[in-house]
Image (cartoon, rainbow, N blue to C red; front, top):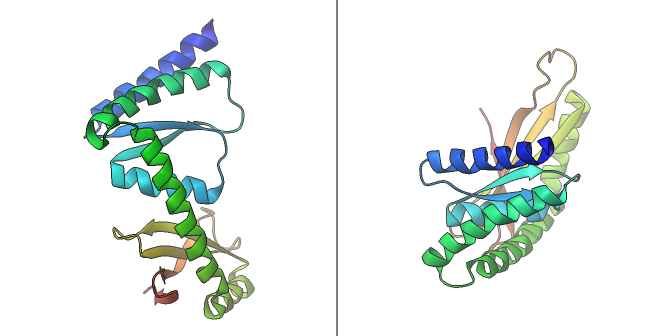
Amino acid sequence: MKKTVYILFFLTSLTVFSQEKENSDRLLTYGLPMYTHQKAREFVGKRWGIEIYPVAACMVSQKLVDSANTVNSNLWKKMDSIHGIDSEKKFRKETIAEMKRIIEAQKIFDSDKHINKLKRKIERIKEQSSSNLESVSADGNIYYWTIYSFESENNPDFKWKPEFNVEVHLNEKKTEIIELE
């Protein structure tokens, strides 16, 4: 009983908080999606004015699933009034299309020899590097990555440091490296 009350209180708090935020609609998610699916949903959500809000990872109770589905059902009713009937299906279709573009952009990114060389250089000097897909242009043609370095020595806060940015131009199938100052 306590657990149920806590979960309902938690989801109610999330809903109230999302209503307090300026025009913020939240899609509650649970489970561990693939990285490309997560990013695609995030990018499509941004275009739709929906914040993607994870409420649980891999361990999910049926009560949490039911509560999240109730909140999401209300969101889709609202989205139906904005985007037309079956907005949830439209959102999923756009998310799948976005995933395909992300995968294509990732292939271009991964195959760029100069980017790989710079990442190896970072790893030799600073131990580790990490690439993070940050955003996509409004027209869906340019994907923006940041390459980070991590050095365990002299890094008491354990922070990743941005080293350079990469633009992947999907239509031209080319990359552009932008050095950070």
